[in-house]
Length: 340
Image 1: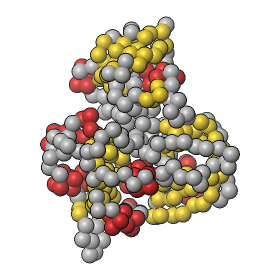
Image 2: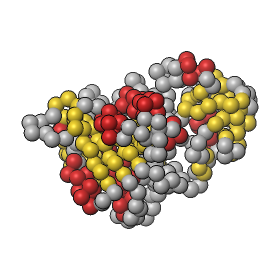
Image 3: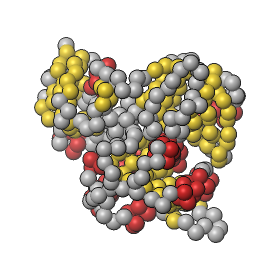
Image 4: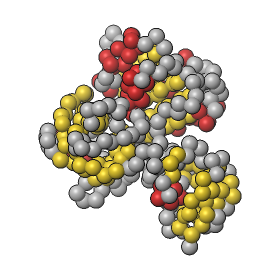
């Protein structure tokens, strides 16, 4: 059985089968709606059901609590239509703008940026042009049919390569392979670009970037793109890590701050500041709140662990006046049965 779904306020329609998630149905209709993990863990695809009924499927209560369900919210990656629907969903774009593709790639080089962070640079086929929005990610398509997702850490350049920042996950099959066995010139297969985390350029409001650990990767891509295109916009980057080594490209961020008068960099260490550390300590989003108690005129782009994202979204909106429509996030997640 199929149902008609209309996205508001854009008015874009698509058809959803009863056994297909709303997100997949939208993507099949070549509509790019906000999404991230596609597994119910990050909450990026949360939307409000204005009319009609859905089955929430495997939506976890940690991401979609009972209060949200009662208020008509749903996770599009998990929910299935049970009637015709009208859904409030912002930032809808056409997939024709940037097509999702499957491509082979070759490992160009590996560079350890920290004990648990590897820079992985991929070389794409010379005959292919891979388009993406800074902030998006790619999936590695593994031989056993599984996938691993990593944000693109480089802006779109002419050298046809992609930079990724891979954090070593204890017991993680793929990340352990990257650190111990992957070699230059190895052939991999990717699909992308994926996700909807990217800078909204229809607004000139000051930007707050909030990164936790390797959540710096997509934010780096966005900032490098802004610099390359000479876009002038007030920017503050808050980058948090448990210890100094987690700020694995600290000097790069300091260089941005020296090069641009409208750029400010605030590093934050939460657990083990080194001797002589003169930077901030504590939770990274608390540092942003101390500096910008009124965020009503800002846009926030946050990337990192789900706990950081959830805390920042709640505190920024409730205590700093940030409109929820001005908070954009990419939560780094993986499901329990799909270790990284």
